[in-house]
Length: 221
Figure 1 (cartoon, rainbow, N blue to C red):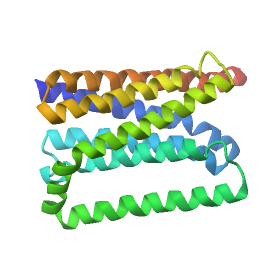
Figure 2: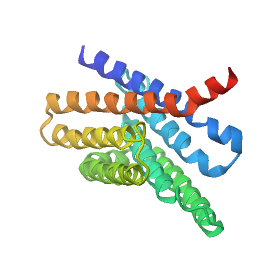
Figure 3: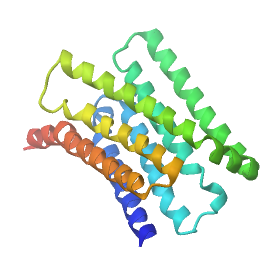
Figure 4: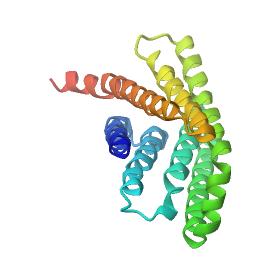
């Protein structure tokens, strides 16, 4: 029963993320500016990390690859944090720096993946030994995004944008709750983490629909 509930939550999370990608890709489709690719790509990686988990729990994927969702998820959080860091910097040098950073992130992810595939036992030992630190790092990334988006809302208050930092705060608390699950296998902490994650993603879905879909829909009419 527990595994079925966990798999369901992961599938729902993945579906929401891929819907978010569909909404968030609209600005890039209209402008063809690379700076609009950050958010959809970040949530695409996040959705992929959630989509892999059911394969691990249903044993359709080798158990040696249990580290893969966490790797991709951490990469997604780093990618999103980097996207927000460069979002208000539109100079030519900044765009070049962003492209270099993006390339390095992709190379880093690919390298870690290849190392994990070629040295599965070493990767598993590293995974179990570093989970705590990785999740703390995830909390730091999400906290940075939450603070950044909250500052942007304060500068330009809007009834819609206030929900964005709240969504990231919920994701950060979700990752923080996993620390307790990691330390003492608390089922309540895991359940709370999954619930907060869904709440955060649903907030993003509602905000994205209002921001990226409704205006185009009204214009088409």
